[in-house]
Image (tube, rainbow, N blue to C red):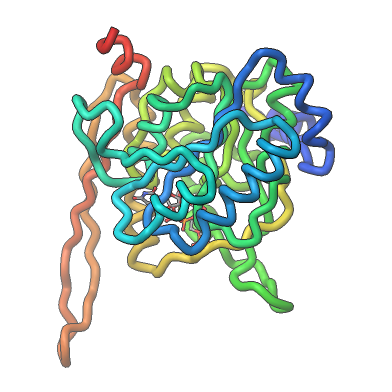
Length: 315
Ligand SMILES: O=c1ccn([C@@H]2O[C@H](COP(=O)(O)OP(=O)(O)O)[C@@H](O)[C@H]2O)c(=O)[nH]1
Ligand SMILES: O=C(O)[C@@H](COP(=O)(O)O)O[C@H]1O[C@H](CO)[C@@H](O)[C@H](O)[C@H]1O
């Protein structure tokens, strides 16, 4: 188990603030590298358009920091694709990317398939449900990666109040606080300095993430952290304070399933040579009419192989 001082040392030297960085000042640091923003989106018609418009106007047109904005439609049932395309994003449906490997549901699947269509050397994942999105999310994530060649992965963190308005108490990030962070202390303590280990926003060097498996659902975020730590070490990872994030909060049933995926990701990624799927069963209670029913929910969490293996088979 790493010494707390090791984590403390990492925290003190590898924690940044978005305000440290300026979009225009980062452009010359790109060199000949291309930067792709990748947004997995399922039923996000209400928010994805504003996010893409902000990115396009501020970080493509006004300051040429971002080279492409890609939205991966993850089996949306609303107008996510049309809204994203109208705002200026390249839109791909998850089923149309590397169709030879089939298609699964889930956030991790959308993020994994984005690696097959991005043309950038550097990628940034963003969630599509963030309200009050600003370009600082991307500038802050890119800052450490463009100013320190020793980094391969930068994770976001922020205050996650439960609601907007004056009473912006904390309260968001329930799976993070109640499940992920205790599991990290128990099973991957080197990661215990990350404030938001499940944050959907991160920046990365493309070759680093094309070399690791992707857990296909909500376990993807912690799964990537575990693999990047193993492949590159903590010193190649950093985090950046983006200030405040307001987003849609899921109901407890959805969070309960998310918890099973996050727990399964630790099992899947703890043993790189192990199985590619883990099944977990939870007992739930559901009121049906006048009576309470006891039901069991079995969740199967699977992982996809490194994308560079899939792409090499195409050559
Ligand atoms: O099957 C899915 C589930 C989620 N998402 C996207 O992944 C991001 C984070 O998901 P969600 O908001 O559900 O997670 P939360 O932030 O509520 O934990 C959002 O952009 C979702 O649209 C996705 O692409 N496919
Ligand atoms: O942090 C969490 O507990 C969950 C749910 O957040 P809320 O309790 O709904 O604010 O959200 C995070 O985890 C998900 C699973 O990894 C990610 O997909 C989300 O992007 C991240 O916000």
